[in-house]
Image (cartoon, rainbow, N blue to C red; front, side, top):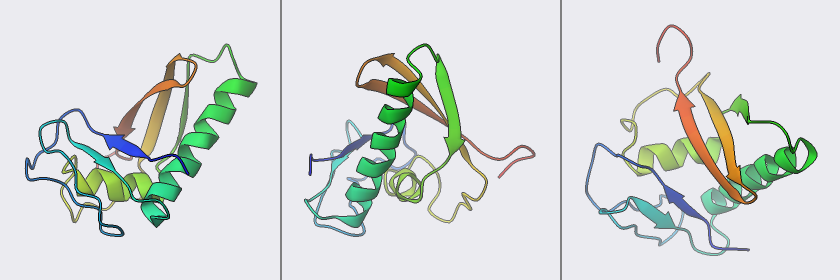
Length: 115
């Protein structure tokens, strides 16, 4: 498994993030977290990223895609302080935009009407 690194541009809590499922500790300055091999959250993020990659490989002219928030992404958002820890992420969506092959950005949106 390739080490999965999660990065959030601006978090609310600047303490070093720590994965709830592995020994990974993050960098509070960059808000990145690299998961241990075999970490369920890291594996879940790898699977989500692979699905995004497959979408853009089969839809090369698509400017973006919108999909439901993955469970591992939700844990990462909370762990990194991008959303408060008790936020209900039911119904959240992700807009994934491919900047170049293998380089994607993600924007997270609560359900219409608020979270």
